[in-house]
Length: 432
Image (cartoon, rainbow, N blue to C red; front, side, top):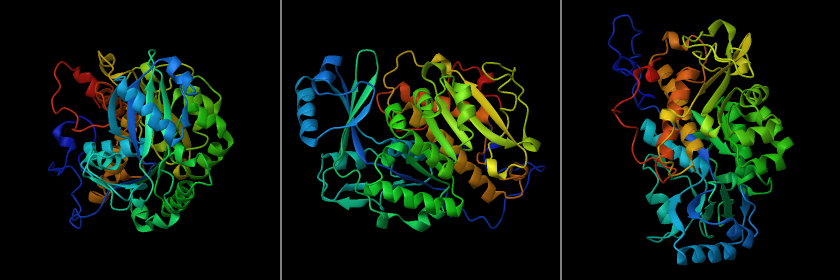
């Protein structure tokens, strides 16, 4: 397990300082600190098109919608002939996040979903496997006779992304394929709103089963929302589902508006924290926010300047670590915010997956927390049950840095870790 973020050597392990708590000698290093994810396995096909092209196929700009396989074939052939396809990648919001988690942490992740039984060199299923980290365990995928799913990402001149989904076998994961023990031993279970779109889908029933297993075992459940249209369409369902099962919620500002009815990022965080324990909110050019709960006795005051927006001194306790609200005697809400790293890339090559990258950093931090608690159970860092290893402030920095890496490349997936050394960076940025 690599530890999250850019830190001084003393934050790594093993720790040798005399005033530190000793490592548990019963720790063998064989324990798994994996994350489990359920996803609609897809190949992302990214292309540049005009609004008239979207209109010609009846695609609603900025939304995610299902399209027939024959229509998808026709669109793909047209785009290829006009040389408008800019990339083909292994996709799926959960698949992207787990891949990036593995690259960042060097730890195992388990992906659950359905994939074509027959795989040939060069086909979509082959491309998916070939471009997924070897640390992502694919042994529990359910083989199906149907073709691989495809997600066409249409990028218009204004940068807006529109998705057309050709289902293939992406919804065919059956409840019988859910491995109970693997979920029970996981650091987190990650799901997306897309797989909950229709409760009659086999994958939706499988997700419900997995959430029941995780909740009973005390495994944090992480939900990343889909497009705002999907959230608006099933708002009541998601409000109830989040309150019942979800511990960590990831969304962007449009999805937050659809869920809470509040446009202001901080106020939407405040409202959503009535439903869940920890929230990661990305706001495009305005950076990202993190909101959570902490018990008053464990709140740590920031050493940074206090800021006031729609909430007065909202970052006062940003040095605190997140807790489940149910485990707080006197819960208080805490927030942190960060602007885009280095002002954002000079050239933004890709916005698809930036939010997934930020979430992968948060998952890494959560897994590192359990790793540290297992290895050094008597550490003062585990005086109570925290959800994260780092403070909200530090999580903002780490998630922000990973998003920057995604934005500056033409792929939603990392294929190497963050740079070991980065020149011309303000050291205060990485301060605790």
